[in-house]
Amino acid sequence: MTIILAFYNIQILKFKLTPYLGVGMFSSACNAMKKSVMLSAFFLTIGVLLEITTQFLSLKSMAPVYFAYAGVFAIFLGIVGIITVSVAVMIPSVSQRLQSCQH
Image (cartoon, rainbow, N blue to C red):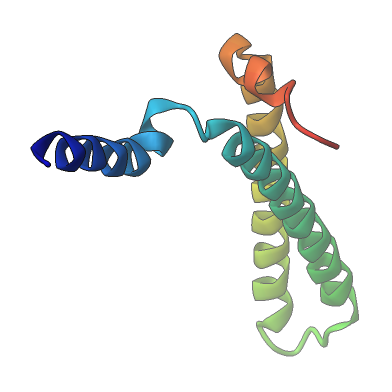
């Protein structure tokens, strides 16, 4: 009876530690890269839209300045995100994990 309980506890421990052991990392690496690229594209799009909106706002208020700064910041975040993903893909261990992704 104790052998069965010990085996059961090991299986539970193995299940809880699976993400930390690297067994379930393939799908999470793929999802993380997809989400990173999508987030970067989102920031770039929002930044461009904010910059276009800035051109149509009245110059009598400070609103164009806030929109312009927010747009530049969003574009900057998008570019940093794309560069980070590009550099991460060049790392050999990450590249090996991403080769098993299903596109």
